[in-house]
Length: 246
Image 1 (cartoon, rainbow, N blue to C red):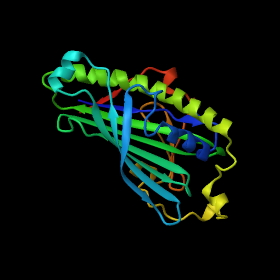
Image 2: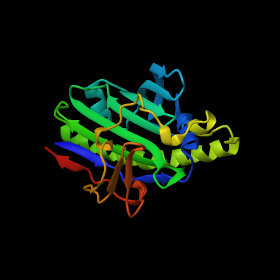
Image 3: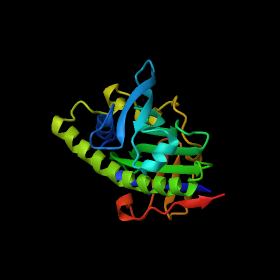
Image 4: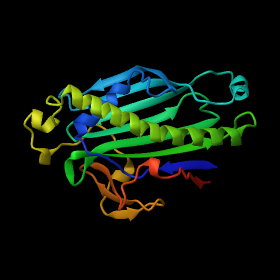
């Protein structure tokens, strides 16, 4: 069984650049996230004009799992690869994470996107999707799946609180220097060129469709994957209900 999760759209009523400054405060480590032991940069790329910045990190996590399970797996920490691709010109951040540890037994994939609100340039939207496929784990497949879903749900709510805390800290320090790339370099935002960042396939095309969670998706090639719902609820407001697919 493959467990999947698609978040509702979350809206931060702050400009993209402020949210990005707050997001970066969690690296290389973040005491506010107990399971996040630390990270190291394994790859970094910056375009000549500074518009595109790609960073890959190896992240070390300390999941709360039963002692017996840790002994059987012979590990204390779990490692993930995280790729962050920000396009300052288009004002988008794509986050892709996959597990390194036990990759032959468990498949964990997560995609997150920050982008400008389609109706307010001073607001930032966030959406998240993930999948979990426990192929085999020493006969404890069901236990591992339950632990993973529980911890993922708890971390979703915690992540929102932490980002909002860092946003307030960023604002206290001053945000005058955090201006859009197109404003800083005097570019016309309407004449944005192609990005070096590969956007998810579902970002292409136009129209509107309703997801299994009742969230309306409005697609746009200019701003990335723009989601819209009648109720902008956060994960805190609802129970995690993974979808199952064969």
